[in-house]
Amino acid sequence: MQDIIENIVSTVGASQQRGQVADYIPQLGRVDINHFAISVATCDGQLFSGGDAQTPFSIQSISKVFTLTQALGKLGDGLWRHVGREPSGDPFNSIVQLEHEQGKPRNPFINAGAIAVADALLSGCQPKEMLAELLRFVRNLANDDSVFIDEAVAKSELATGDRNASLAHFMAGFRHLRHPVDSVLGAYFHQCAIAMTTQQLAQAGLFLAGDGLNPITQSRVVPSRRARRINSLMMMCGHYDGSGEFAYRVGLPGKSGVGGGILAIAPGKASIAVWSPGLDPIGNSKLGTEALEALMQRTGWSVF
Ligand code: DON
Image (tube, rainbow, N blue to C red; front, top):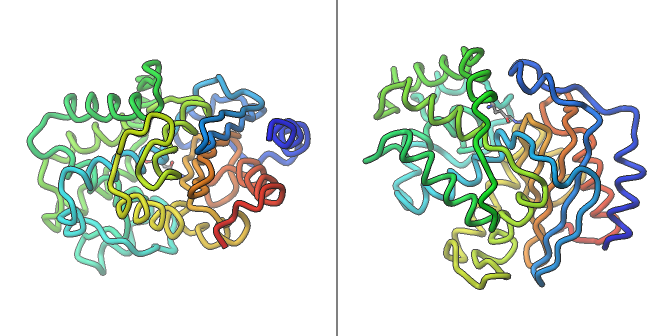
């Protein structure tokens, strides 16, 4: 495996066509587009890495996998009153479907859906407590206490978050949020500002490769059925209106973030994290997707 990874770093990682760094969040626009990292945590306890696998990056929408997992733990199937589970076929920050669908977002991974999930997680606690609980959960999954929330990214997003504020107010107008819009947005912006390395992220995703059980620590994170359901949502909705293309090219459940990271799950085999900050026009990591495509060609891990 290490030779496959070295090969991907020296070929895909060296590409001149790197896409474009997200600059609608100014702090993300400052990240060097030349970063490239890949980590593979296998279900038999090995960890392989290449490139900048020790450099923390902003996980952005990948955090939505962790908040969804927590919200399902807290509300169970009650969560589906607040958010659907169908692919949207629209950009991640789109508002159009909300108007026709009574303010209920299509799925937990588009921005509107993740804002609804953050609102659900705020039941019975303050944003600070919710974020502390989330950080504890992610640190525990990654088996690393150095995972942190990058305040500069959170502030940068708050300062330029008009689209997300519009989504939240629109949902509130349909009585789909139960907490003040500012609290929900504060929680959402901070969850997106979690910073992790690909090594930490690959390890944090292992429970989804292990049918809900962390194969290293043997601790159960979620019931098996829930792990499968989260994986199915990642497959259908994890790359927004690029989800079909990702399934076609990579064939794994995956979740992307505009920081250029992707978490992909090969059930029973491995959890894979890649990072390359340049995005394709839809907002998914360009070289990250190519790296996963190359890894699938070499390992045959596609679920299809
Ligand atoms: O709310 C936003 O726009 C960002 N914090 C997260 C969006 C994102 O990562 C979409 N991913 N490809």
